[in-house]
Image (cartoon, rainbow, N blue to C red; front, side, top):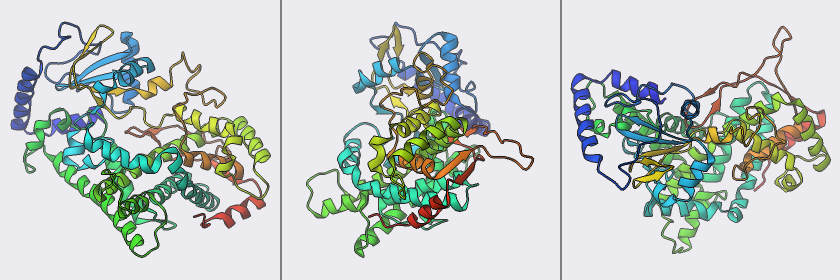
Amino acid sequence: MPGSLALQDMSHLGTNVVFTALLGLILYNLTRRRKGPYSGLPLPPGPKRLPFIGNLLDLPKHSQWEAYHKWCRDLDTDILYLNFAGTDLIVLDTSEAANDLLERRSSNYSGRARLTMLNELMGWDFNFGFMPYGDNWRKHRRAMHLSFHPTAAVQFKPHSLRACRNFLYRLLDKPDDIVAAVRYMAGETIMCVAYGLNVQPKDDPYIAMAEQGAHTLEAAAIPGAFLVDDLPLLKYVPDWFPGAGFKKKAQEWKQIARRMIEKPFEAALRDMAAGAAIPSFVSTSLQQIQDDSKDDCLTKEIIQDVAATLYVAGSDTTVSALSWCILGLLERPDVVKKAQADIDRIVKPGHLPDFDDEPSLPYITAIVKEALRWYDVVPIAIPHRLEVEDEYKGYRLPAGAVVVPNAWAMLHDETIYPDPFTFNPDRICLGRYMAFSSVWINVASILATFNISKAIDADGKVIEPSHEYSSSLVRLPLPFKCSMTSRSKETEDLIRSSANEDVF
């Protein structure tokens, strides 16, 4: 986490490394503080900084978004300034500030932070979510858009539907292991959408290697997680030098990333060569190359990069969103009953919910939207980089600053959402926080087939969910207990007959 990992790295660095790093930091700060058009203005409010290291010691190990928001409230500001050993950090705490800067001045804020650990040492520069804005970024973004704009993305709904039916089957057989079932469903969906791979019923190797890669990403992508992000000079420290353990970790994580990028892609190529490929992002994109597409965004390397990006972008976010949906439903039995009544009225007897039912089930959509607001999946959005010095509300925003939108604070703004920490699907949510289609179909299907309630322990006492979570780029709830029982014998039979059904 921002405070803990950075301090851990710094505490183990040798004296010579610390001296060299601090000397480099001093020289860096002396050369970078050039006078700009707003040099006479003050920096935004922020906690008191120490010489050289700034606020490096201030951030807590958990829930940094809450710390940011508390500082903003204490200082009566919606834009916060911190400094991590020379790296400027600007936190945007309200939707107004985020819209004013990231939307209306997007040309100045479209860059990405350097992320030395992630991009330069771990080899994650393949992921266009972390690429600097430019031609390479545009090519990767367009390659994804060709297959996932609203019209084209419809072709992948059968993949989500099949994974959902298999998910219901796993719940039926192992209702006590719901988080594991959710995770496997997410992995199955993304593997099929990205590569056209039908995964093994359990312990699939492609899901396992992709999960490993996603976990390393989450550990390294948070601002301040590794000191080398604040002091890029440290990347030149020899691997054998005391305190350079982060380099060994980066090499191990780089190998994990390469396996995640290459192995599923190779399997997809084998399926295509054998004429057994399921429609997927990889097969569709490669087919366009064979059809002599003139679009220069479609190269084998870009397709491989984007396919891997799809997994890390969609897997844990789906797990998080669906898990928080379930936890929200445990808090509101009345919502469960209301949603089930809607489903029973709309879905034909003897059928499971389908995407065709979505327009007729707006309350399910409201449940998913509210879960995404209640426990937002990514509390701190991916950092931006300010390209040129800027001014906002009388404050100077330094060129090169890392700019972080505090999504958690925006989605828990009491002026927009009364009682913001209560799960309440009846409120109106911001339209741009739309649910993933795979989350929607899974929520609808769970409610159609299972009764959901809090678990009971051996003494007959209700087990209250703790709502504890891992604090990383994606906020994932820790494993929790709940009771899920099929609504009827007919429902059980329907689930079993629908599992592994060929929907392509």
